[in-house]
Figure: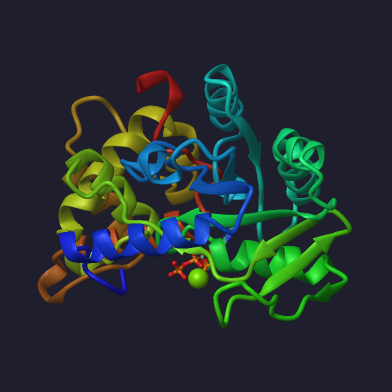
Length: 284
Ligand SMILES: Nc1nc2c(ncn2[C@@H]2O[C@H](COP(=O)(O)OP(=O)(O)OP(=O)(O)O)[C@@H](O)[C@H]2O)c(=O)[nH]1
Ligand SMILES: [Mg+2]
């Protein structure tokens, strides 16, 4: 994380977002598909105070598709529109545009009934650091026709990006703080790279990651590192095997478990172990 989230920072972030919210009809809440619960801001509903919201599960390319489907149903079951997206590859982005336009229809209709001239739907993207807000904006911008100029009456410096005839998004996303007080969520945020390793004990992050992988994603895990795992083995022994496979050796033939852990973490984050969801729907 670039900034530490002290209460003062949180208050400032939520104040800034509340200001920006006045300009928009819809909020796109961007979550990490690998951790749809852990990457959610704890007080998002309070902050957006009833604005129509779309949940976009980003980095869906890195998440387990079965879990993603279950999470989408979970949100939809709560009456929240939810879509899986990949802000790099573009998957889901068109549908996101359509759903965002739809979410604002009733508001625009009631404005029209009051005699307000029809205008494009305005949306903003909200999410915790590193979830892909800028990537999504760039992706949407890439397919957009043009960038609209500053609008008079709108806070100086704010730009609207014209995404379609009917949709504009604010070019500056709202940065929310993550669920840091929840230890389990904090570990998953660290494992996916949403929070800096320095904030968290890497050894512990690796240990918890191994615990999840050996239970929920055993096949992928053992085949990536060509190791053997049985119930009696400790996580340390699993890491030792990875260390041997990857030549992480110290002088005297000792296995450099720390380096093995670093390799595992890097490869997990890059998606090299295959699609994996840490907030498993079944166990939440
Ligand atoms: N695989 C994959 N990587 C993604 C996706 N979206 C974003 N990323 C990567 O995630 C990292 C963070 O993306 P950003 O767009 O910078 O995230 P952000 O939310 O703007 O981050 P802050 O500006 O720090 O708050 C980058 O390395 C992106 O390339 C996605 O859908 N799939
Ligand atoms: Mg950004």
